[in-house]
Length: 391
Image 1 (cartoon, rainbow, N blue to C red):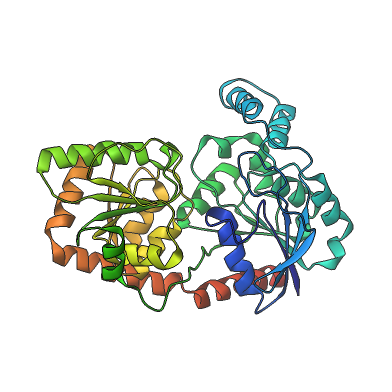
Image 2 (cartoon, rainbow, N blue to C red; image 1 turned 180 degrees about the horizontal axis):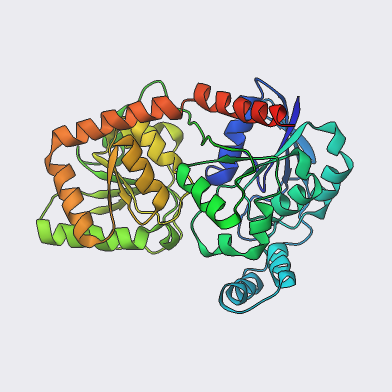
């Protein structure tokens, strides 16, 4: 069985999101299938400018075929079109224009899929909202599987996508909440679909003491890992944390790691470490008292799974249905809807070591039951077997 994984960006330099999700799944499923990746030459997700020079290469044993982006995205023009789409009455052609601007615009990739459809058993498209998934699924619907990585934001309600979710042979969901969101929106109950998610690569050991010494951190700290961005709920996290400190007098810092795209408050108890190497990232997670997850939009939080794999409890934004659902199912974390919730939950977690231990142990059990790579690989095989039986 030859399977193409189709994604907007792909490479060792891309360290998060659907792209990393795709790379990990492609590498693991190469044990079972003849796998190839179809992607663009883009690295930057804002402009989609061509950056990779080679048309073909092999990454971690997986062949990668790259296609040029015809033109980079103009963020100003894209912002204007998106504001119009989300706030004004519009037609189908306007949404197609939005899709072209959303990008990455690579008609060459779609033409390749059209002319080489018979070379592949299935095409697995990652991220519903991009050019490659929409036009790729239109081109080979009978051979398409979709990993939507959908979030509960305004974009998913565009008419363009309601039809898209009814077209593929199967859908591979990241969470129960994502599946229910898409099914209610599109009424695609006849399309086979399973909740699968993604595994993660855990190190054989961590060294919390060396990590703390290297970065000058105290024994106790809260930890946020990921893009530091208003869209990830970081502004609200900073406000709540500083208010909590002022009202309770708790002597614990908030440590941040990841790419920074917003202003971080200047405060001695908000510590920004920058982008951490993998070894330090896992040691930071393992040594943290609590992982803070303020994001309002997630289809699946990989860092939350990593925290649970390391027996770390999580305090999550309850406004995100996926995070709230995972905290409930795992019993591995608490969640908040507003500041009083945040204050109460954080106060309880900081002052009850037994609760933190229980949440962490529950999280680890949940991770091993649902998100080890053996489990994930078997679920991908099961999805294809289900489709083959109904052919």
